[in-house]
Amino acid sequence: MKTTYDIVGIGLGPFNLSLAALLNPLNNVSKKFLDNKSEFSWHPELMFGDAMMQTSFLKDLVTPVDPRSEFSFLNYLTKNGQFYHFLNTDRKAINRYEFQDYCKWVSKKLAQDIDFNSNVIDIKHDGEKFEVIKEDGSYFSKNICVASGPTKNIPECAQSHLSDKVFHAKSKYMKNLNLEGKRVVIIGGGQTGVETFRNSLNGMWGRVESVTLLSGRQNLQPLDETPFTNEIFTPEFVLKFHSLPQEQKDSYTQAQLLASDGNTPQYLQEMYNELYLDKFYLKKLPEYKIAPMRWLKGIENNGSNYSLLVDNLMSESEELFKADIVILATGFKSVLPKFLDSLTDVIQKDHQGRVIVNQDYSLLTNINSGKIYTMNFSRHGHGIADPQTSLMSWRSAMIANDLTNETTYNTQNTGESFLSFFK
Image 1: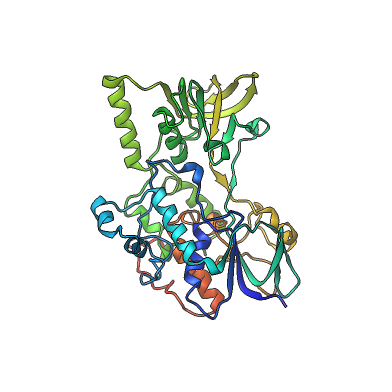
Image 2: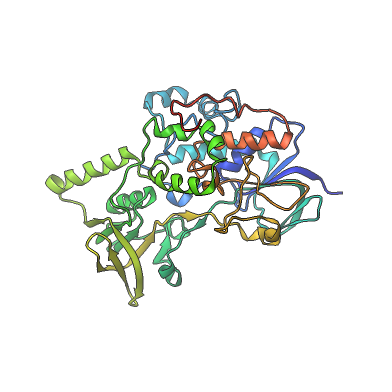
């Protein structure tokens, strides 16, 4: 007879890896985590040498809720003989290469709880338990946790043109990219767009003929990472924010866009300094343009190249850009994965068609036995911290406590804010 686990996690990015790390010491919880990849990897297409995390290394998989955990970043440094050398770098944030390697190290320590090469295709519920069906078998579980990652946000006008010449920045085409002599247009002025622009300009994929960055934003806007803004990335704020009326939450979340979706200020400074030095002294960079207040309106395939019709939101006019390669740094959107289609009828949604996520990060459903926990589906419910790594260990602790019905980890008494948002 097959084992019925207490929880099966689907998708193994940092979010579910955090949950796996916190559940590992709990002998009273049976768990299994599945991923379709052959080993842990995290946005490998976007592993630029100058790409930094936007949160402190102390906000790792476990430390904020269990600083004594063997799965902490500090333990990773110690076990790998890097601790003192890391201190000498004098950084509070780490490179994405470091973060991915740390997560891979944790995944290897959790090997008995993880099944890679497991592509989940369907999930059913028989009234008592879930059946997680993959291509070559199935698992039974009382609960599941879905952290399969967001869906690429592709502009409608680009969808019919997707190819090795028009593609999303998180794409297999980034791996063997050759931009030598090409006119490149990058759509999107967030961190990924700016990093792709800068690395294209500096010849990471060959010397371009020209590179253009188009952004609908008003400027290359910096991440608001000031200390008082960061007070909204605290458990106390998220717990109280969740209980607000939905209209109020939507309004506040929209207004705080740059607290979670801006460009690292230091990165912008470094890039500006490079452009300044080249403009007035070196004069070695290829032709480039940074064009904010632009909105992609249409794409025409000319056979060997593309014409991009763009609205200039500042001058209220139309412009035409020519490109050989179009890279869509247009972000992601949270959409329930296809393997949940069989459960669509039991998952409740709000008037905008969004899933309703309870405070414990389980979906509101009509299921009487078992829960569907989710990661990165509650920006509208828990606020702008939800898609970020900033509170991932705290969220995992919330799920672990709910799963065990015990206060295994401290998730409530996390310190009073310096800002009195609530009564």
